[in-house]
Image (cartoon, rainbow, N blue to C red; front, side):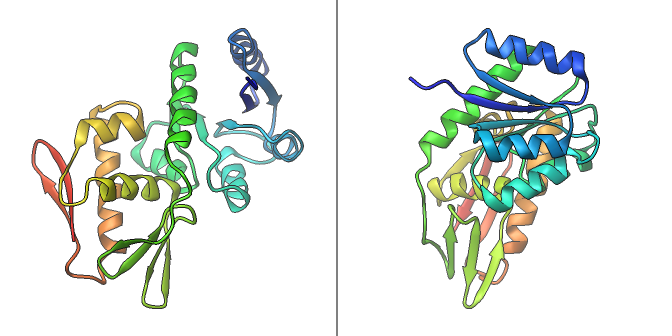
Length: 225
């Protein structure tokens, strides 16, 4: 079995070394870069399976790096490491292509669980194209919604959330399940973040009034179409 290759972009040398050695002791292959520009070079040459990116880095920050990589690869998992904890900062990370985030300080056990969860999630979803949602066509692979001739681009997190809503179409998508699946836990902070993404999906589906994402209080959400 091939070892999982991790690109770790972390400008704090001591933390980078600790994370690298800890992951390698658990059979990962780790490429460590201490700034965003070097990390992009390593991404190009080593073709890692997953990215762990510090947000605040010299030369190129983690959000900018993720945005550039997403132009080439829409599916590689990205975890942000950040000392920031405001909802707006976390949403910015998701909007720039992040799949998950860890607030510093973090435990290695938690990082490893997040890495394995994201890699497992990729294996569960094949390339999915041309799913009908009312008058829209949803392309999960390209992360787009097409309505008439209009193409609406989705963020990575929006596409993931819509994918699970479509899977449970006309049924309740359990709130706790989807928070744990996409956000890693179901705390209040993540629940608020998910509510924002639900609102964004409603706006992007607003051109078909037969579609509704209904809030089932105390249980979750239901996509009706």
